[in-house]
Length: 342
Image 1 (cartoon, rainbow, N blue to C red):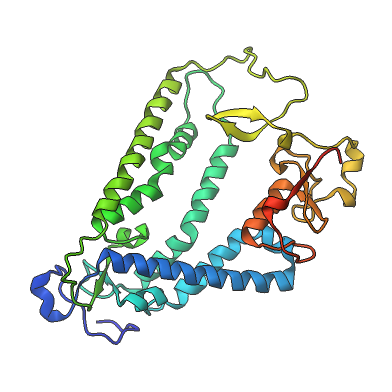
Image 2 (image 1 turned 90 degrees about the vertical axis):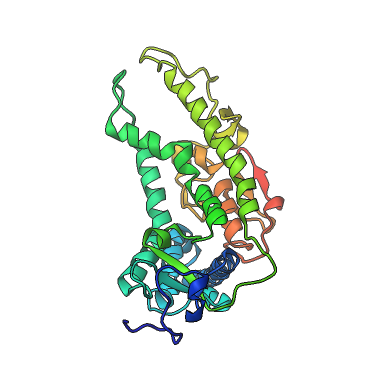
């Protein structure tokens, strides 16, 4: 057996059952795995706050806001790289006394397998969001009746089945109780524990999984049928007028019943000329763009301390840090004041 960071005895044979209780191991309960995952998530969040504070002190708030996703990836690599990837238990695994176990190897996972798991855990969500943004930016085929491979991939990624995959995987965990992280199951890992099995008749989360699966399946089926009916609708030709908005009305990202609506928050709330918009005083301190001009900005707003930002910028900042990015006074999102005609 290769050297690991554990001091416990060797794991049992691949088929861990009650008959192998003499080896001192059994498959971990779903409750243990879920508590371990939650505890690790809490520690990652705390570590990310510390890393963000250090980066903000050295590089400033604008740098941190622009690279928040990168800091999140680095935090996961730091935490799981020093624990799971280095053949040591994470704080969550140590808390509930569980160990990762490679079923086919009949041994603890190799370092390569651990490293692949950490890489997929850290970079998986980021790569997925990058792929979705890339496909969304690429224009669809303008040829009637012709669907390119990129169009098919865009439809697949945007389908309800794929978008609901994380929820479906969590429901599958509640029903089967193997791994919360899909990467560990993909790499053939499960958790084992030396803790004796409970005798109080606990049955895990099967009932909760069934309850969560019913609305999830309903949403997927409903979206599939509605998508099929939309696909049968012929696309508009190049001469068809599809923009019936009144002049000067901007359709923003806000929707009601999947229909875009015009809102005052998505209009450029300014009467300044184009040259005046480029003045330094007109720039948002967070995005460094003219405030409230683009439809994505959501308009202009003022904090209680008197500083002016784009609505979307300060909303995103406020969910991460409850303080003004300029003066550090307390920031309450419900106290933001919209500013018009600036």
